[in-house]
Picture 1 (cartoon, rainbow, N blue to C red):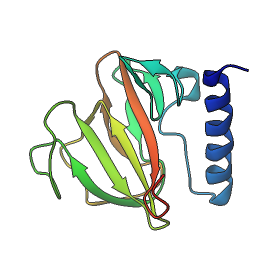
Picture 2: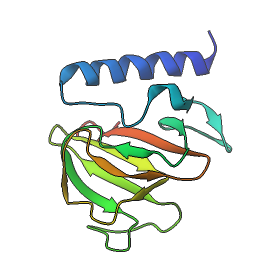
Picture 3: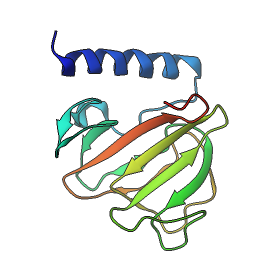
Picture 4: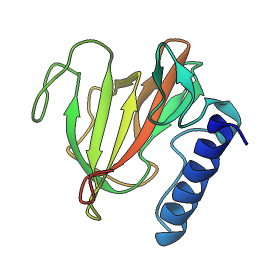
Length: 136
């Protein structure tokens, strides 16, 4: 089995365990739009999440949480100006990252699962989940 398939299987098992652990978790976009998976070698580095094809669609929060970073000009903690993104801290130690999402202007600090975060832009956008408590 090649490394990409192995990484994909590990990622799917991780995501399955996370999604099964709480009923309020949702896909941030239509799974049919997935264009790249965790571990893919892209742009001279390995992908740290899922890539979704971008067609200007609305992107939703994976789970309830607090918006801690955005590139909307009124950042909650800090800002990195290269590509628009949203980072949400969840109560269970996870953080979800949405790279390539233009945050909606009236995005509240606290968001609910499935709540609209903003519009996808460019050719594709990236979604990743970080386990901050376990550093992985």
